Image (cartoon, rainbow, N blue to C red; front, top):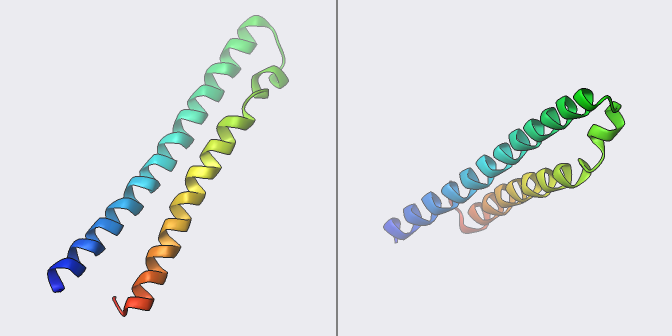
Length: 86
């Protein structure tokens, strides 16, 4: 039983780490895309409004992945409280 509990705790910890890393990666990629769009729009002579258009979907994806990471953390904490784990 101890081995299964340790393995499950490790698995849940790894899932939480993967979701946290994915959220960070999406946020960094979103900022890179925004920076590139700003540079290209300044080069063309367009305003900043053009650079920010279409950025909402990238921000939404970052929010969804960040929310999934937070939800996974809450569910893992709740499961360990119910199961009496640490």
